[in-house]
Amino acid sequence: MLTIPSEIAVRAGWTVGIELDVTAEGETVNIAPVARVPRGRRTVSQLLAGIVQEEIQSYNEETADGLRDAPQGRELI
Image (cartoon, rainbow, N blue to C red; front, side):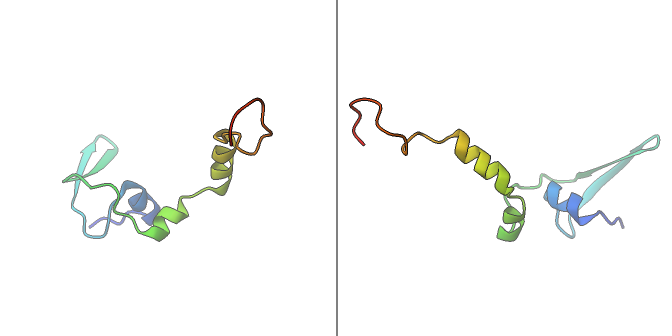
């Protein structure tokens, strides 16, 4: 039995009871799921926890399309 910190398990998409392949090479231990772990299996609270408000604000500013700008020519708004 192996206990993995919850932050690491969430980041990897692993849940309780997942079967893992554990291999050792020298002093290094590698852990990988035996079967492919489907992505997208997260709760809404897990998705919301990953949101960084500053990144969203920065993205919105970078992708602003100028709809609030004053007309520059003959464009129709």
